[in-house]
Length: 201
Ligand code: MN3
Image 1 (tube, rainbow, N blue to C red):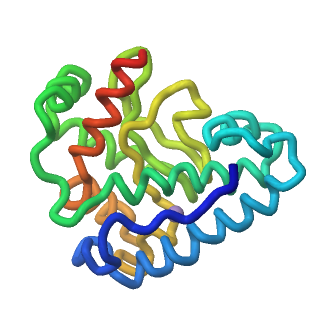
Image 2: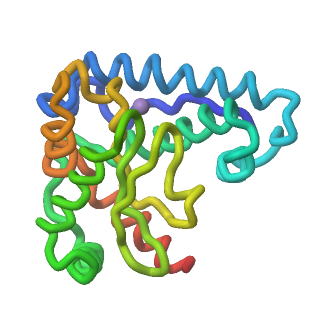
């Protein structure tokens, strides 16, 4: 396969005021595009040519850092755009909400733990809700890593590289993480991935 940049599933200004048009112009149109182009160049002639994206991410982890960084970031961003929507962060679909309450005690506690994971990820990286052994957990990973290379299945992830929030929030990463979980998340998409993860477990 070769990597290609997907269109955003909404207009560049659709997530305002929580994520600006300017942030999405840089983040999607320039940063994600760079991962796609660099990934394609590094894939050429490598042992991973012709493999699926998930196979490339898992196979290159710990073996081919240049390819992994770009393929991993491409994989993470493909989902990241879909994990957000205009007027996001509303009601969580019933079965997912129940699983969250089972795992964390309450939706508020899940949000608190998720935000804490993002705030405490030192340097660039991501924070996650993931399914591991049938249970929803929070995780944080550096750079282009994801639950996929740590034995879990991501159902929600937020990008805490500075390119994701510095235009809108400057140094206030906690404010950005709060806005993401409260006002941007597309919970219907999270529920879709959660249902598939539970069924395939
Ligand atoms: Mn990014």
